[in-house]
Length: 250
Image 1: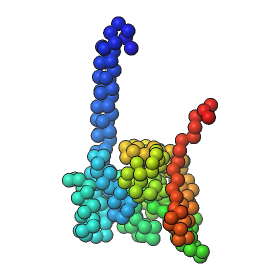
Image 2: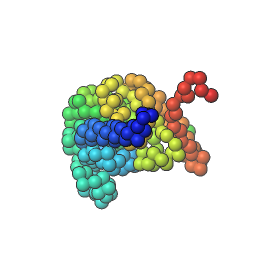
Image 3: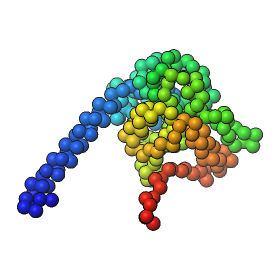
Image 4: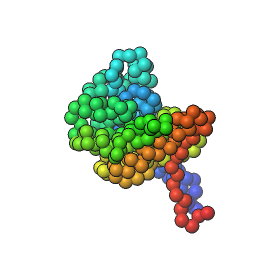
């Protein structure tokens, strides 16, 4: 601080802070001019869609029944610019796609969306199935994300949000502390776009590597759901990634 004129120094600091905030807001506003197609209007789509709209994105929901009361109520919660249409039309109108459909429907849905070349797909699907003992297990040898990539080879798939509870998606504060969302993908530019969205929603992010790491992320959900599928819902638990402490700290 300028010892000769502390008030002037404080004023300069405040103006600098305001300018930085305004510049950041302008950059964010420019970056968030895209349309996000939310394919699936269940818990995940219903939690994230309105929040995308709050960020300034144009949200178009892709549904099997876009005129239903439930979907129209979701559209109403997503601002004046939101709309609902068929899954194919929503995907075609979107720059970025959130894929949030049940695993059993995923292949059919992806293959029905038309040309997805160049589009970013945020894949939140978990390929889980019931095992003989009643618990869940992975339903594929690779991962849902890798399968999605094979069904839409020209798209840029990023695994994200698959292991975050939908209530935390809607309100990160529900976790009682910071939540880090892992990202996996083979396209660095696509991951950067998804990272910006996820962090703008109030989460931290960690890049866990290429798309094949999605299998590990999807497998983590199997463990989390053990109490539920054993009938011990009262013992349910959540996990959240945390940054490793800096070296030299206790």
